Image (cartoon, rainbow, N blue to C red):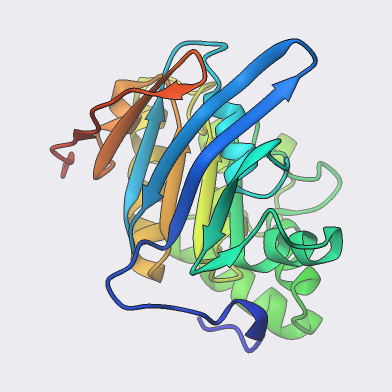
Length: 245
């Protein structure tokens, strides 16, 4: 399931170096400082859980790392290329192809089928429709949704919607997947299922993962955890013993 679309601007890699590096990130919203000097590294094929209470700055951190928000100070580099220095168009292309996203509500388009939702991401990244639909069908089947290709989000369970959102995030074979509370609205069983699918499927593509969560069950599937408090990453990272069953 390989895409023919490439992004030469970002084909920069140094063996042994972190895939994503953030240094001195500061982000303010008026008088509120959401990030107060964050340093963070994400390794090749690493699954990183970012934890912390509501209002700690963890979602803002994800948005800055992903190029959705521009930091007021500091840098974010993907494979040595500075994201904050890119033009709006370059960041849009980055988010469309080299980054994948999974959000709490799935955010699938309600009028489209599961197949169409996933294929649309590939088409926006430059795939012809036929190839995009083929990739989408393969990914949905791989994530246990072969029987739901023609279902719209309203006809699927919350867990199935999130699986489709994972397929949409991975169909472009991104370098990094960003997930913001992907299991926040699910029951315990569905939460565990989505966390496993998200981490395992992301790793299988060679992508790295940043998942913002307050759920220790979700974090338990990741390789490492960091804790954000008052806009800062706690001094010590926590290496996780990854759940395997």
